[in-house]
Image (cartoon, rainbow, N blue to C red):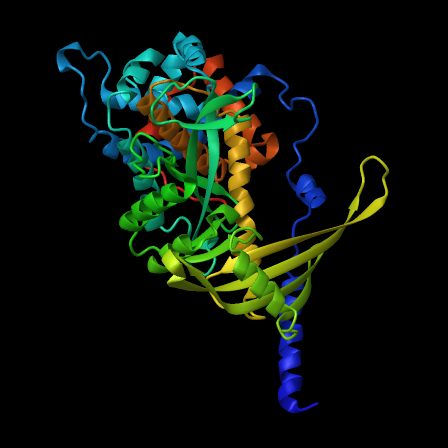
Length: 503
C-alpha cells in the first residue's frame, strides 16, 4: 500500500471515530434524562407552595416582558377600523389579550371568558402586563380580527424573531452558521359544509351512491429548528382558493403556497443564510430551482414517485460507485451511507429546464426490545434525500443528521399544537380572516412559551415538571391567589437580559 493511500485510510478512520463519538440519544436515555419524578409534593407548608408560585411567575415574566414590547411596537401599526368614539378596549389591549389566550393555553373563547375574567386572575395579569388595561369579552377580539389586516400580527412575530437574531441568541444553535427552516403542510379543520369561499374541498367515492365532500382549511407552516431540536413557529401560509386563480379550475396547492411563502421569507431576510428541509411532496424541479435562486441549501426527502427518472438513474449509478460508501455507528444504530452526485433532472415544458441534484441514501439497522414479548427484534429502515451540495465522505453524515433528519421536528411541533394545549384544530371563528388572525396569535403564544421554557431562568423548573406541567403550574399560580405585587412591579419596570439554556 502506497503512503498516499495509507494516509487517506487513516484520515477516513479518524473521521469515522469522530462520528461514533457523537452518539444519538436513545429513547431510554432521553427518558431517564428528562423523566418527570413520580413523587408527592415537596412543599410542607402553604407558605413554601406560595413562594414557589411567586418565584416561578417572577422568572417567567422576565422573559415575557423581554419579548412583549417588540411585539407591541409592530401591533400598534395595525389600522383600527372601529369608530373611536365607541371603542371601549384599545387595539393593543385586545392584542395582548389574544396573545395571553394562547400563552395560557385556553382551548376556546368560552373558556377564556369563564376564567380570565375572575377578579384575582385579572388583577394578577394586569400587574404582569400593564398593557392589559381592561378585560375584554372574547367576542370583542373575534369581531376585531374579522376586520383588520391580520398579516400584521404575523409580521410582529417576525420582528421578534429578527430581534433575537440581531442579539445573537441563536448563534450557538446553528449548523455551519445557517438557520434551518422546515416546511410542511397540515390540515387545520374540516367541516361537512362550505363555511368560507377560501376553504379547499375534497370529494370521496365520486359517482357512487355514498359520494360525499368535505371542506377544510389547509396551511403550510414554516418553523425554525435549532441544532438542539428546539422548534420555533415562524410563518404560516394558508391555502386560499378565493385568491387563487387558475385557468384549469384547479385548487390552490401546497407547492403554490411554498412559492408565496419563500418570496416573503427572502424579501424579509435577503441576506440570512438558510438551510431548508421538506418532505417528498416538495421534491420537484420548480421548488429546487427556487431554493437555488435564493441561495438556500436544502436536504429534501426523496421518494420514488417524486422524480421517477432521477430515482431510477440515481439508484442505478449508486450500485457502481463503491467508493461512495460510509459505514458508522450512531448511538445504538448502525448506518450505511451511499451517494451519487450530479444527477440531472429535466422538467418544465418539453423538459427544457434542468437542475443538477445529489442523492444520499442512509440505511439504518438497530435492535429493539418488544414490550410484549420482551425479546430483541432486528429493525431496519431507509432514508433518501436530495441535496443541494455535492456529497463526500466528510459531509454526508452531518448533512443527513443535521439538516435532513431534523425535518421530523416540524411533525413534533404539529403534535404539540394539536394535542398539547394550543387547540390547533379548533375553529375559534368561522370568519376566515378572524380564523387566520387567531392562528397567528397562536403562533406568537407558542413562540413565547418555547422561549420561556428554554430560558436559563426557567429550564430547571421545566425539567422538573415537564413543559405541559410547567405551563399548567404557571396558569394555576395566576388563578390561585394574589401575588406579591411589590416584587412583581420591580421586575416589570426593569429590562432583563434573555439567555437561552445551552444543553
